[in-house]
Image 1 (cartoon, rainbow, N blue to C red):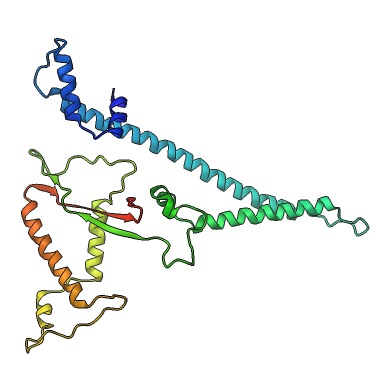
Image 2 (tube, rainbow, N blue to C red; image 1 turned 135 degrees about the vertical axis):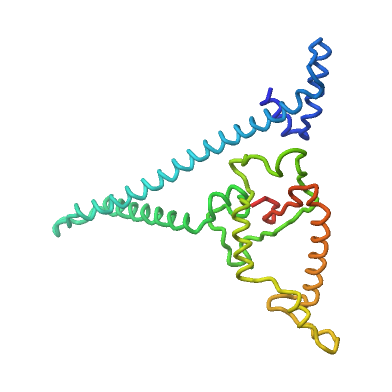
Length: 277
């Protein structure tokens, strides 16, 4: 039944409440009375969540075994190629001057050289390709043998997109966060890593104090001359206005929402095909 519901929710909007209400009505019509109303929904939701977790763990395990086998095969192929070269150099005997070199020997030598150069090229190209993780996220951006094209200005275009309407409410009981239950292929950055990067950014680029901002205002009250930052096509005044409006809106939103929500927004890095990286 869980497998059926899992496949159904792929093809229709997931709604465990409607499914459980229908199941309760179906059992009630056949004189199967439940102890309390809404007794199935919570248990069914937990069972479906853990079943999906098991399916994801299985797929992650299978893909890991396949990737490990492919890496092992590539390593063995590279070591066998090196051992063949060493043995060939040790067992090399120059042909006698009286016997001419046959055409077959020349053809085999050419094929060996082409095979060696092909393996060397493949090894070098693997080091220059994007990682397996990125190729899985978006094959259009990161796939292919040669993702770099000198005719284009950029190889990859990504963006940071934020959604402040996607919130997570504080639970009625207990803490704001439950036990860690991460998806095997999660794209969320751990909170610990985010805090470490935040501390690093604040160290490298400390926040300007309000006293310094007031000190930059001319004494005569006239606005300072506008300028352009290197590489930007809009004036500094436009950038500062955008930043000020964003900070004001973010502060107002934070004061209104942290009382009821554990998470007040969601931010993601996307490629230009809208695939989450």
